[in-house]
Length: 537
Picture 1 (spheres, helix red, strand yellow):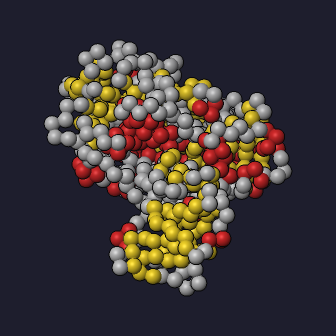
Picture 2 (cartoon, one colour; picture 1 turned 90 degrees about the vertical axis):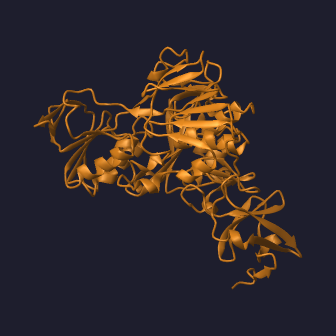
């Protein structure tokens, strides 16, 4: 044991250890230390020490590798943010806060104390109330995704004691959907975000396999597919998007699949084992599915409409690199192509016909060709949608109809980092942030959605991170080498960095997200500079 780790056990069931000398850390620095065998993140900001849990509550990433800006640390992997003084989660993904520990500085030494009961705990669930007996006020949440869950939890964290009802078409309560395209053969218990007991304890009703078919704001009620009606006082529309189906002949053959829910993922996994798979669409979902199947299917062919995967989102250079990665795993690509027909035999898929005349043998066809917002049920409600069917909201997540809010992938909302340009973004963390903001505004606590988009994709075990909003970029500036699969890419529009992507370059994207979150403009000149010290890497 080092001289900095001398345990002294207090009578009150606590463990206290000297973790460092007061002079060891400067402001803006952090260090991972051990107390009672537990890893703790020790941070110094504005001359004060604080200590919190060392692992992100999302997927347990080590926060010591993250970005510390001001009083919060951002996870290097997926962008969750935690206040280093309180441990509270301030940006998503993830649901829970970090435990925080007592810190004392005495005689030039820094002591951290942990209650023995809390040893081994890496997360802290915020305190929540439940429903009051005989409660009359009802918040109805349509959709069972992350926006609905965060809305429900935020209401209970802020002492709302009315009735909360979540209505979802799914067979599961809210689950970790980003995992579906990355690890498709998952047990349902490993992906649900909260247990059944959690919902019961906090008085959150979850109605599974039910669908809202119409909304009547004048009468403040919705109609369900089983013919019943439900009253609401405040409504959240968080129905997400559905996978866009193929429209070519043969799209209805057995073996043509879309990835929407948990059952779809398991079905794609089992039907592709040792079979010939054709994946249509070379953006995020299609590429992740092909990556997953690359060592399970007999063959994987991809069909894309551009020259390279991700060409419009990440750019041709990164697209070319990901294509090479996949080709090394024997995935074949048919680019600048489209599907004209899917042919079958006895009602089952047999081959895919491309525009060029190429014919691909296929047992299973998986389409990842975009999504459609689930807003059809709003017809006649007066709730405004845009030309792509996304529900239009303001910065408070309010629709044009009183007491009707909307959050998540179904929304078109004003994006702060793009001067309040109205956008539709299908990012997991943005849905969670919007669910929280909608709840606060339901409670008359005016709060704007200011989150910076953060996204990640996993291919063959490698993670590409992305932050910002790069649509309309005119130039990409690279640090590192894309062909060596270690790089940082800055997306430029009007001489400003509007987005960034990286591979094996942590925590650059997390730090950029934090700089954007504090309102800093990052210029093209900064991105071009050889010296990246402004990133404090």
